[in-house]
Image 1 (cartoon, rainbow, N blue to C red):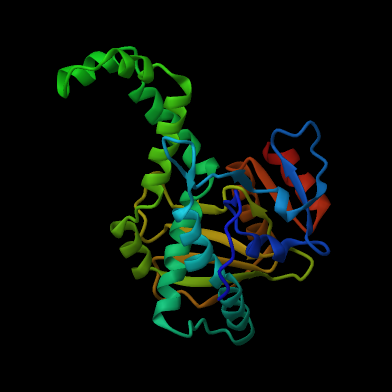
Image 2: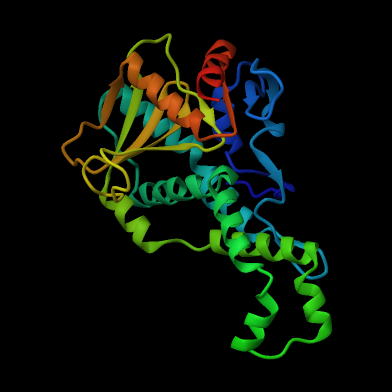
Length: 287
């Protein structure tokens, strides 16, 4: 696999997935929750679902360390075309088979991080931690627990740019850590591939790309009744289910296609598709 320089524009939804939703070339229909209009526009995939240096660790001198982004680009995202080919073969044959166990485990890693990677998922958590950390009593609490602060350090704690860098670096550092517990649960679950029953129906891709379904609130991942799904192409959705007897491939009727698209839209700040009308309908109903 080729190793090119990772750009400063970090796509939290990989371009290898976005390409599958293009109308032509590198353009797709896209609409954001913050848009003045609910009418989707044609956009180049380079300009959507990304943030500048989103996964870069910022050093004290302002330089960036993009080790985490490089990990995703080279160790996970590069396999997306292989996985899509595997999922399409599963739909053709009715049997999902990864060529190696390593490829299956890499997909589990990708899926786990695909959810965490989105700012739609992380921003609320980061803001909550920031509010709890940077309180009016932060300096006094630090000194009571650790050591006296210098005047310069006290000024630094009140500096907005320092706070922003600390919050961002904390998020990136935590993002680079893998939860063995969650990965272990996903590894024990069954991976299944879904496709619309009717050819004129399709899935969307969204900025919060993993939808969770459960029989009742706060049900644990890995329990029967909990499913998590993401989309890889207009005709390919991939899910993790706890039911080992589930078939490798399932057909989504019109209602289930709509339910998945609605769940993705409801929890996302932006959605994209090959269909302008589909996006407009979802944006109107869910936002």
